[in-house]
Amino acid sequence: MKTIISTFLMSATLFAGAITAKDPYVRVMPPGASASAGFVVFENSSDKDIKIIGANTDFAGTTELHTHEIKEGIMQMRKVESMTVPAKGKLVLKPHGKHLMFFDLKKNLKPNDKVQIKFKLSNDETLDATFMARDLKSKH
Amino acid sequence: MWKIVLNIFALSVLAFAVIYKMNYEGVEQVYSARSMGINGGDFTLQSEKGEVSLSDFKGKVVILYFGFTTCPDVCPMSLSYLNSALKGVDEEKVQVLFVSVDHKRDDPKSVDMYAKYFDESYVGVTGTKDQIDEVTKKFNVFYKFIPLENSKIGYTVDHTSRFYIIDENGVVQKAIRSDEDPKVFKKELKSVMN
Image (cartoon, rainbow over all chains, first blue to last red; front, top):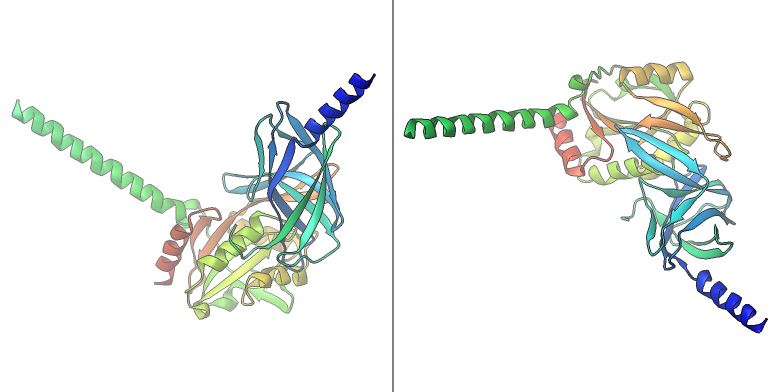
């Protein structure tokens, strides 16, 4: 029994840290905008694919996962239910690409404000990340 | 033998010149509004302070962009792009006009606030469905409301993301993709301003 418990704890510990969030930031939006976007690079150090299946934060009523493409000069954005961070790989959320969408903004973010975002992962774990607010006019 | 070599050389030079010319002209045509079937023309939409027409800006070069305020990425990035691209350009000679095609959700006040965040001189406008349809037809702008199931936003708006450069007389001259190299944009803008 002891062995089973310790094996379970070990595997849980190893899996919990499999996903890390690098360079996370949320966009400071102009007044009048009701939504904002977030960008981050997820890295998966495990040998199994892990999906991001949800996210929430205090500064927005709803957080969603969205894709973004420009096809023949036409901007297209779509909601997706999950995004996969490949085993030993990365999932890049960047401008003009996959991103987080925040609706019902409860706070007007200013540059350098910090917000906490909690991600729900397909392995039943959660990931907490601190996102920095960046001005649209600054380079990124 | 030498005749054959010379002929091959001459033909190669000719082929190179033709290909070069075709490529060069091809690049030029990409930005020419006329070659893209974009006729443009005057239009009137609503601003926070009342009606705004393209002809109100006669004497200035107008940069026109179509988007919507719930657009979290390409629209703000494009206006931010303009902000950088227009540095050093005489403000008195250029006017940026942001048109929201989201006539269901956006109002003139929110559109104008959105535009002015990037620069106080920018003007944001929108209009009724009929008004938006009229202006988008003139500039060959595609826009479509796409329902997003289970999304808080309800729907998104697929739309053309281009800058239209309109000369001092109100004639649309250039149409440039919003993800184009800023150097190309500046070069094309300069050609319209001169």
